[in-house]
Image (cartoon, rainbow, N blue to C red; front, side, top):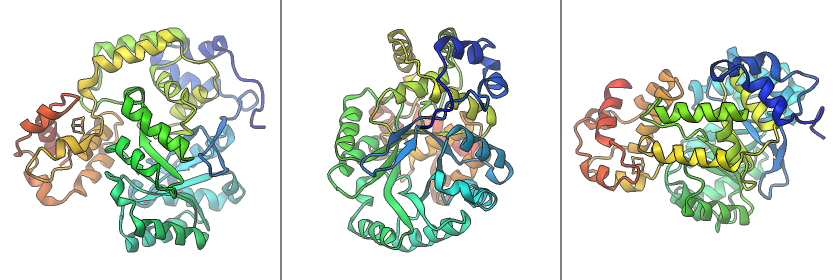
Length: 401
Ligand code: SF4
């Protein structure tokens, strides 16, 4: 039983998190809402057919973990026991920070569902990354290992399947799968019939989850017993950092007892096919706020859902939906438009400029050199979100260089 005490009522939730107003909510939650005695642990859900239950809130490890060990300690106390990192996060410091934690609290290792990822996409590179991850995190086994950021299911070929099976046989991983921010629906639909994908983490949020294609993709994976973790659930616009609609939306949810950020999490949790939400939580305030949303049982009202839907429509031109096959096939140079859009999001919406710039620097020099000169007009015409791709690529070339 993961509950220390009963869950909070909507009234309690509003009183403790909403009353201070949007700007103060995060800090009030951190200071007062989640006390040790009264806090129910974050609930769990089955992760596909793996036989393992995972916390519905996952700690995304894209922050300076070595110097923020208290975050991990508090996450365990609140039941945020699904930790997600990657070989590349913070130049390896994310995994090293988790290793530092396990060295100090080895008894916590068995409580954690530990996930890491590799972008190597080659057998040799993946093997090196896996061994390094085990070493850095001072553990014998990774619970779930992802081939990171695939753009097509063709990456998960027979060779990759054999690699995963060998890593499992050696006891180095328990489960195997992939993460994807691009062409998510196609990747999920392609994964469902394979029979050897245990888990997927994909971009999934209130903007995308109601499209026919995404519904079909998620249904197919759920039927196949693939565990699903949603990421990028805030659906943050890569272009707009604020607009009047956003402010209106924020006001609406504060009246309902949520922040708009908590409402966006709740919208995703309302689909039981999603086992967990991975959220970057680089501050105690955000961990507290997200945990508050996870333990609160109040469902969104139909008016809440309508408000989200209206906002999604009003701001769609600021959101890159990751359908990179559409825009990238319409330009003459191999510019990874979707990746660059994501790096802009890291910089503008997450405020993680250093990480965004380091990711941008990992693009080939030739790509960075030509990016601002490419003609994107055909891509812009095809883009279903009507993104001003040319302008954004030029801005990225100067802002992230
Ligand atoms: S820029 Fe447009 S077409 Fe390209 S991935 Fe984003 S939404 Fe899709």
